[in-house]
Length: 409
Ligand code: HGY
Ligand code: MN
Ligand code: MN
Image (cartoon, rainbow, N blue to C red; front, side, top):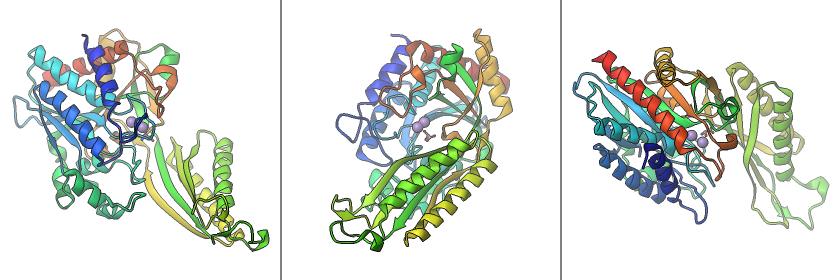
């Protein structure tokens, strides 16, 4: 079986490891993640790596280098998923990096530096509304206040991590020293239509857009739907509807702005009860941080006006606020050279999606290689990457790594 076939087959096998029957959902520090780490860890060991869980719950596979002072190249991506996810968003980068190590071993390639393949534990932030819990720990930027954030069941990050076999008190041990890391290179499906449109199997990423996520909560008064006159209500449900539409309206009117409410909730959640609580989760993105910040400020003002007009209390809880992140020129040039060496046309593109590289950029130089995906579809069970394109991406990463090895020998 070709490496491309193995990569796709393993991503599909991993997609069967879910916390929900009939669809793929795998959240941070859950039993499904434990099962996923066990499966991916076995593939790491098959490739001759050691595999361990770090204090933050990331899976870490290691291939030592010849020279202990030559540092470590970090590869990988995330193993957690969104709800009702596809098989490739995250796992492709982890499984492909393991295939690289396997191929280096089979071809007897010795490198001065070590390679760590990281299976990050929380890129999507589905369970706690944050993101990058695992990669922030590796970068040394984990905010201890996050330990007290709770999920929908009232379980805190700290409790979840302890139950998962992590070590909240020792979270610092997951961080890397900047002078011991050569850089972080992530292979990821494009999650968009550009490569398919350009007829290119892979493309090199020029930068990652900034993103803000906010939990907007309106608090009013629950009550009987049949007895409370409309003029006396403090109904939180229409407030949620208004902020959702305000989001869409602002994004439609602002060039390049993407604003999404992918999750909303009204409580207590009974058809004959006026909602006392209304929650909307905003996701706001733009390539220019200034435009994104202005949009978030404008939406906050709108939420305040909605709350005042409806005599509701507003809570504006920013769960994530990441600036746009630049990729490293040198590492990126090496990826471009490796692709050119395979006769591939040079395609560069920006990433509207966030990635663990956003967190790792605080630690070390980062670069990303995108792989074409069918119909640009992602965050959807039908997302797919072909074995042929996975094989091309592996060739590029293989040449990149060997060239890095010979230049740092
Ligand atoms: O939401 C994102 O951009 C990424 O998929 N976590
Ligand atoms: Mn994703
Ligand atoms: Mn991803």
